[in-house]
Amino acid sequence: MTSTPETGAKSRLTSGHETVILFFVARQMFAIAADSVQEIRSTDSLAGSANEMEQSEVPKVRHTIERNRRTYFVVNAGVHFSLPVTRPALVLILRELRVALLVDRIERMAEISAVYALPQAFSGAERRWYRGLAYVDDVVIPVVQPAGFLTLEEFQQLDQIEIAAGHQVKEAAPV
Amino acid sequence: MSEPRQAVSGAFVLLQVGDGRVALPAEIVSELAPPVRLHSFPHSSRFITGVIVRRGRIVPVYDANSVLTRKNSSPQRFYLIAQRRVGKVAEMGAIPVNGECELVSAEMRPPGGERPAYVAGTIAVGEQLLEVLDLEAFIASNSTRDDDSHATQVQS
Image 1 (cartoon, rainbow over the protein chains, first blue to last red):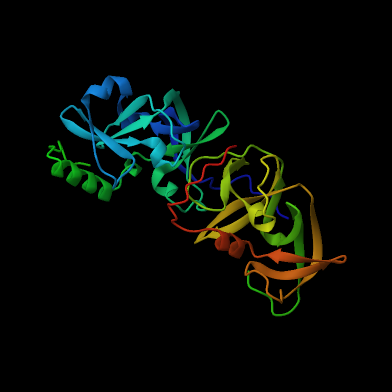
Image 2: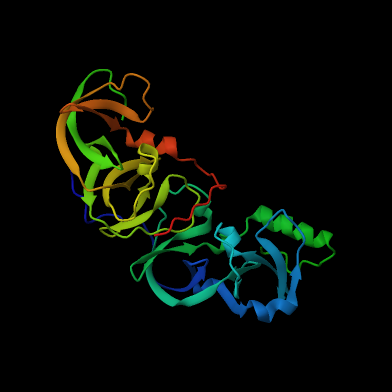
């Protein structure tokens, strides 16, 4: 047997401090870069401005909301990550994407010193879902990839459904 | 690791996985790690139960028990950490074991019979004939790439 080298590359994707928001979906904690979130609202406060989408092509999206003259597709994070069904209480409205994310609760903000690459052994959809992994208070937490919540094809599908329903998709580009 | 056509001498690590005993070539084994916390998060890769943190590295844990013994692995286990190649990248991987490991020198013989493709050969230890795992083939035969329909959530 040989010992594991103490030194060498440890698969850090990024180093330097980064502020993240720690949030929960179905008892699972995730992190998202704080600067990728524009606004956090309660689902109750947005109930009046949400429009229901009747479609089954992208099951994780059931509503749109209008914010600042933009149409955001509301992604249920539990469905996205195939987690047990919960009752989300908060919406994270993302900054540069037309995505709003339904989550259960915010834990807190935290500083992370590095994002570690997802091991290559993970070969499924998680490679699209996560930027990498962070180590916060002795717990490994996936750092979500904001662009991973909806693919370009899903955006196009949802835009077409909105247009077919007679809704104007505001600020269609950038996605 | 290619299947030997004749006996090959070498060092092997014997490990107890669930209720079975198998061998790994010693040259790919890095260490036997103590029980540490298994961290889990949603993913869709089969055959992976989560990750452990060892010496500053995040190491994926393979659910070898489900294949070798048909039993679910217990969270409180030791981990045998071995090196494997994923494409062009060398990466550590962990297999839950019960902590009983033994280093032996033996001659590996061709597997013979109808053994799974991940059996690289067999070694005789005492009166037992143990299978030597080809770790790459073992993982490959139990993993499905880009299978988005099997999201997994394992509780730590």
